[in-house]
Structure formats: structure tokens, C-alpha cells
Amino acid sequence: MELARPLGDCKSADITDTTSLDILRLLDDDSPIIRRITVMIPYGMLDAALISDEDLGRIGRAIAKNTNLTTLRLCCAINLNKDSSRHALHFLDMVGKNRHIRHFSLHGGYGFNAIETEAFGHLSSFIKNNENLESFEITHGATPKVVGFLVDALERRSGHPLKKITLNYSGVKDDDVKEMMSFFMNNPSKAPGRICLDHNDFGDNGCFHISKFVRKSGNIFKEIGLRGNKMGPCGLRCIASALTYHATSLERFSIGENHKIGDPGVIAIAEAFATYPNSIPSHLSIEEINIGPEGMKSLGIALARRSYPIESLHLKFNHIGDYELMSLLECFRSNPALIPKTLDLTANCLGHWGLVVISDLLRNRCCSLERLNMANTDPVPYDTVSYAVNSVKFNSTLRELNIDTCGLADEKCLDLLSSVVCDTTSIQSTYLSNHTLVKFGNCSSREISLFLAVNSNPNKSLIARHKVIYHHFAKNCRLDLFKDMQPAVLVEVLTYVYRGFACCDKNEKEQKHA
Image (tube, rainbow, N blue to C red; front, side, top):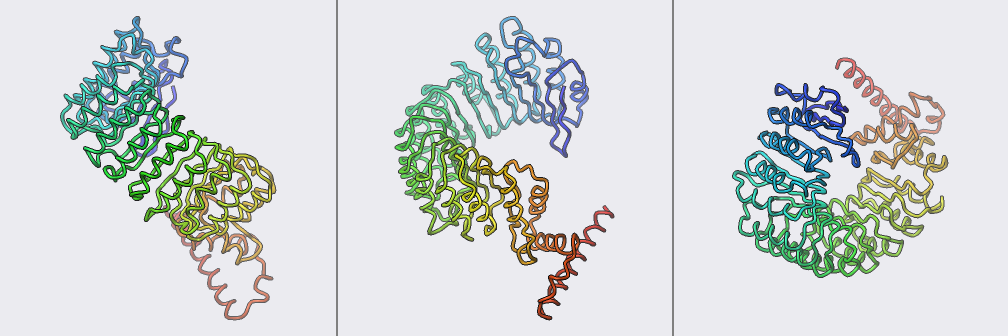
């Protein structure tokens, strides 16, 4: 058994071995220790029956009477076949009696086909009767009846609607989407604020029904996840046009891993969003659909027309090369403050010129970029890496940078990064070093990690003062630094140093007192 260490109010436990009864003692008697629990057997070990029928019943009864439990995740833990169906159904029945669970998810329910009617009957009863339930998720629960049971449960449910519904890898088809959206159109008060239908089997027809609901209901959805389905440019254009005018409160939109979309689909959604650019969701994920230069340019034009930047743009696994990236970033050259705060370019084909262009943007003091991920891209020469890392020195917004596969494990590159976050050649150089970067890939250097940890302090002037004092006075006092100073400057420097030492003494006393 593995029990996670309690951290404040975030208490959790993972059950991976029920030979110990510790988890039952934690759950019994309304224990205040556990807030979240994951019942989990590793994938491929269902036949091992690590959770016996007897233990499953005992855990179910303990969960049923624990009033502090708010999150329950069942990960491939219940061997739902005909031989053990009675015990599994009894477990679901016990879980359903707990009216305090707010977040429920079932991962890897591959055995539902054997007892799907009874199992989903218990789950739908749980949704219907638990007024505190906020989110419901089924992943790998493929069955033709999953949407029907869900709709039936939502129809009979009283109280507030679910905040989020997730049906991933569940075989949802066009007709299932139509049934769900038709129900939401007739009962808009029961529609969730967030819906994720990733890795299912619906296409353009399903997109049409989603857009139809969005046009009628307006600002209900805050998140829509459509990764890994079979939609094409036509379906995407239909959704985008509906979102543009009728879902201005949408925060997250994911359309990755839809290989039929390609450049035409990205152009379609970009052109739709360009008519009302401030309606573009704050978090946009367009991953693994092979975007070309025209698609990147159209996307950049739409984003550059906004009055403020979006929070994140994820473009992983898109075979993006230098030309495609330049097409996107060229749109922000006149106003770099509109570049997304998080830009994820992981696992693309970027080379020398792509890195140079994005480095030039980082050197612009108006650039709004806070997180840049370029891991697993093509290797580039050291001079290019040097140019990219040095550009961070002039940037005051970037907090996280990842370009791990460009040879940054080399000692020369680590020394280069060290000089960027804390240049000790002079007091002025140290003062003007980067005080914003807090994460650099999987950096193994202890010294650099310490510099980055210091940068996490929001008071940047205090960070600069501490670096100057530590490296030029406390660590190794260099009197030659004062040799050529004018008297007026010397007074200011000594006052600056004195205040720094006074601040350090004050912090040390406060820590000892605490």
C-alpha cells in the first residue's frame, strides 16, 4: 500500500495493495485524514485480482460511511466480469451511498460490457441522488449505452448541474453526441460548464450538434475537449463560428490529434475567430494535426488582433519547422505584448532560424511570454543555443524555459546559463542579471537550481540586492570594486550594501523567532 504524505487540506491515498488494512483504518470512523482516494491496480494486472472480493466489500463499506471523502478515482481496480459481478456491483452500490463525494472518476472499466446494464444502473443512481457531485468521468469505459445512462441520470437529477462531464475513450459516436446535445438543448439548466469528449468516434455530424447547442445556449461551456476524434475542416468551421459569437466565456478548447483537420481546418477556425478575436479561448490546444505555414499565419493573425494575450497555446507534435514558426511569430513583431503567455512547441522540427526568431522576441521588453517549451526539437549549433539563452538575460517576464535537447547538458551551456541568471563579473552585471526565470528544463546543476529558486521571490529588487551582497561582499569581499568610484557613487553603494545586510539580519532574526 502506498499512502501519500498529507499536505495541509490536500489529503490523499492510493490503494495499490490491500494486504494491509491501514487504508481501512484511515477510512473508518469518519477519519479527517483522507480527502481524496484512488483505488488502483496497475494496467494488465486485472487477472491477478490484487483486490479480493472480500477486501473490495470492506473498502466499499468504509467509503460509504466516510463523510470527509470528496474525491474518488477507480483506476482499473474492479474486475468487472461475470464471475465477480456480484461483488463489483455491491462495491458500486456502497460507493453510491456516500453523498459527500464531489468528484468521481472511473479509469479503465474494460469489463463493463459483461454487466453494463447493472453497473451503469448503479452509477446513474449515484449521479441522480448525490446532489453534491460536481464532476463525473469515465475513461476507457467503452459501451454503446454510456451516453443513454448518463442522460437518464441527469434528467432525474435534482439540485445544481454537474460542473464537468468527461467521457474519454468511451466509443461516443455522432448519434450519442446528438442525444446528449438534444437533452441539453431541452434542459439547459442541467448542462455542465465543462465537457470533454476526447478520443471517441464522432466526426463532423457530432460537431454540428455541439455547435447547434452552443448557438442556442450561449455562454454555458467554459471548456470543450474534442481531442482524437474524426472531425474534419467542415465540422471545425461549424464549431468555431458558433463559439465566436455565442460562447465568449469559453476558457479551454482542445482539438488535437484530429488528423483530418490539417492546415484547412486550422485556417477555418482562425478565420472564424479573426472576426471576433477576443472570443478566442484563453487556453487553446491544437496538437498533432500537422499545421502548415498558411495555418500558422492565419492563427497568428487572429491572435494578434486581440486586445490582450491568451494564456496558453499548445502546438505539440505538429512537425512545425522554422518557416511555420516564423509565419506565426511574424504576426506579433509589431506588438509582442500579444504573444501567448505560454507557448508549447514540444517535439517539432525547429532549427537555427526558428530559435533565432523567438530569441529576438524574448529580447523585446514588451514580450508577454512567460513559459516557453521547445523540448525534443532538432539539435542546433552551440552558437544558436548561446544566442537563445543570452536573450533571456534581457527578458523580465519569462519564468519557465525548456530547450533540453539542444545540447544544454554540456558544461559550456550550463556555465552560460549560470552567467545569465547571476553574472558575477561586476556589481552592475550581477544587478542586471535575470531575476525572473525560475525553471529551466531538467537542469541538473545545483548552483543554477539555487539561483532559480532565489528568483521565485516576487520582490525583484530584493533578489538583485541579495545576489550582489552574497557574491561581492559576503562570499568574497573585493575592495578593488570601490577603487575607481566617485565619492557620491561610493556613498550610494555603501548605503545599498548596508541596507542589504540589515535586511538579511532582519530575515534571519524573524526565522529564528518563528
